[in-house]
Structures are given as structure tokens and as C-alpha cells.
Length: 280
Length: 257
Image (cartoon, rainbow over all chains, first blue to last red; front, side):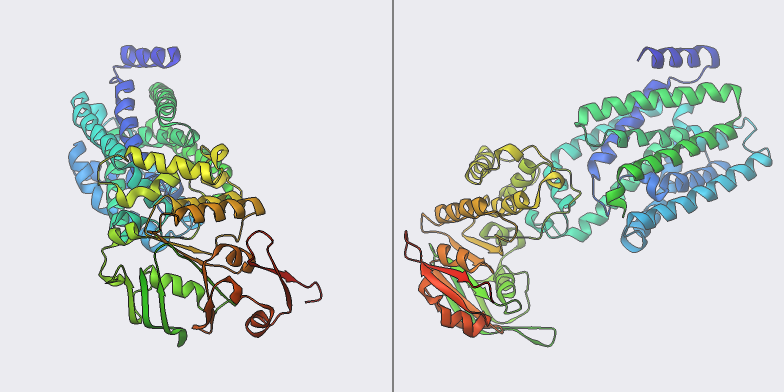
């Protein structure tokens, strides 16, 4: 914890970065809701790294921030429809198995890699313009006030997850069990995909790709109790994002993006190894 | 009370069930036996409304089964569902509590009665040491008991179990048998069991139905099971003895079979 506080303080004092621990807290809360609201269902996997949504939303955010705005709400609103579409495609049409999702995710990552390299070569990412940076750092870093609605949204998600816990658990057991609650499986599945897209869009729009990719830390603790999972995830996310912010001062934004992507790949590989029984 | 009136069901261009007429009374344990493909599971699925398109009438408490809302139907009938996904991480206790969800008000927590019911069945089926284990970590024999407990916990007027002893060891079968007797003790509930385990059915059921090619070929008390009947419908030679405690038949298979 001392390391995190030290890094955060150094970042804040030396480079005038916005208070990243708060940013991480908001993002972590939001991701925590996301993981509680769409839990452990192999057909509706919360592991976005596996299906490459992180890369896909990065492309969307980058395109939007370059052409439209760096306003978090606008980015969220505009990125939501394509995100919902790809989620529906992955979970209802194509991605029936984790292996397929992984292949689609890999394609997304390669695409992102090519785009980042191209933009870097063209000096678009190297420049210190605020707009393209939004896709990497998120719009939350440009305004601390955005933390308040994000916090409220996360709290609402937490309450919802708490209250609907039995129904969500029943949903996870599968379509044979879900009618016990007197609800239809398919519409609820669709609602969960929408909720999942909303939260995914939310934390990527506000936290950016660097903050977003840090969320894989949750999966290291996915079988522990929720409080420990939340605190451990938060701690590792803070270290991760502070280190990336610190590195960014000495290296280039493009390289930091590549590092984040590489870590995303490695975490993906690690998670698949750990869950090899589920993936095959 | 459950009434089946001239029920027929076509599956894959042939009769899965044909002209079934039967009445099951409260307080009874009904055992359904027959060869594989004889229509045992189909009959249970038709009663539990998993098959909704059929000819004839299935009445539960004098109302057609199709007229019940989904949630009401699950309050009325607890039927065995397929095993939950093996990678679900919820604990056994959480899983069992979910059986009470048809009685839970939306957005409200489970009641004290729900928790007590779960505790009671955990104790009855001796699942205490596994209560905090995740479902994915349970051995299949324990999972079989858990599935039976899941249905018993509902305390529904109709309990339907399809091949409940398939994964169970001998002690689990005995515990299940006791739990079923207890379940119908107050005379307000019906248990329908389909099984390939003839001894379990003979020792447990008050009344036995033998299905053959979708039709009721024979029905009666446990004494229905004799060597001739088994030869005729199962094409196998057996020796039948009587259980010294209750006089019910015990089926012995010859190794040369």
C-alpha cells in the first residue's frame, strides 16, 4: 500500500497527474458491479480479455475521440451500440465456446496493434493532443468531477447485484433452472448483455484502455470472497496504473499502449491456462 | 391429485406415450419402471409440463397443467432438472437455497423458513460436510444427493424424480428412501419416481406402473414385480426373494444373464 501511495504522490507532485487512486477506485467499483451482475456463466463470460472486447472498445474510443469528442458521456453513448452489437454477436451468434471467443479476441488485439503502430508512425499518438489520449487514459483523467456520477452508477450497480443475487445465481445455473424464478431465460440473457455492455463501456470510456486492461486483476481472485476480491483487485490496479503513468513520463504513449496490450495478452494466456478445463 | 386422461404424445414421428390413463393420489409414492425408451421420462416431463403439446389432459389438483403460470407450476411441482453446469462456483448451500426461489418475493431476501428447510434436508441427506463446497468440486455421488435435496427442499405437493439413484452409493439410496417416506408422511404430497433400479422402486414405491412402448403395460403394488413380468418386459431371467423386514420383492440377477 505504501508503494501505491508513494507512486501516486510522486505522479501527482512531479507530473501533475490526476489522483489515480480515486480513478482506480471508481473504475474498480464499476468493474466489480460488472463482475457481480454478469457472473461466472460460461456463455456470458465476464472475462472480456478472452473475447477481446477491451481491444474493440479501444478502437471505437480512439476513432470517436479523434473525430468527435473526449467527453466521457458522449463516448459512452456512442460506443454503446457497437459494443452491444459485438456482445450479442459473441454471445448469441458466434462465441458459443471460449475457444471461438478467444480467436475473435486475438483478431481484435492484432487489429488494435496494427492501428496503434500506424497512428504512432503517423505521429498522431505521439502528439500531446488531448483527444486521442482519451482512448488510452480515459476521459476521467481530464475531469475529477466525473468521479461522482461514476461512483453513483457503481453504487447503483452494487445494490442491484446484492438485491438480485439469488436470481443471478439461478441464471448462472442455466436455462433449465432459470424458469424457477418465473422469468424467461432469453430476455433476461439479453438484458444482462446490455448491462454488461453498459458497464464495460462505462469503465473504458472513463478509465481508458490503460485503466481498463488493469481489470484482469479481478480474475486472479475470482474464487475468493467479494470483499477480498475487491480490495486485492483495487490494490493491484492501483500499482499497475501508477506504474504505467510513471513509465509514460519517460517513454512514449504508444509504447505504454503496447505494454498494456502485452500485459493483457499475458494475463489472457495465464487465465486460460488456469481455466484450461473450461476452455476445452 | 394428478390425473392423466387419454394422454398421447408423439416424439420423432412415433408415439412416445399412447393413451395413458392414470390417477395418482396424495400420500402415494408411485414408481415407474420400464425398459429404456419405454416412455418413463416422457411421462414425467409431460406431467411437469416440460412437454406442453400433447393430446389428452393432465390435471393437477383438478386443473390442466398448462393453465398454471410458470412460477405457480414450480411451486406445485418439484422435478429433477439436469445437473447444473459443472463450472458453476456457487456453494452447495447456495444452490439448495435457490430451490426455494419460486416462493421468494422478487427483490426480497429468503425467509427464515427457507433457510430452515434447507438445513433440514442437508441434515436428512447427510450433506453437512459439503455445504460450503462449490458444486464443481463435488463428486458425482454427492451431486446426485444434492439434486434430490434440491427437489425435496421445495416441499411441493408433487415431487418428480427421474432416475434419482443413478449416481448414488448404497447409503445415499437408503437416505433418499427415508427422505421420500418422510416427504409423503403427512398425506398431502405425491412422489413420482422413474428408475431403472428395480430394487429401489420395489422397496420404495406404494404403487408401480410398468411402461412398455409408451403404454401402461401393468400396474399394482410392489408384488407386481415377479420373474415372469421381468422376463416378459425386460427379457432377462431373475430370481425374486422377499425382503424379510417388509415382505417386498428383491430382484436378484443371475451372472449367466
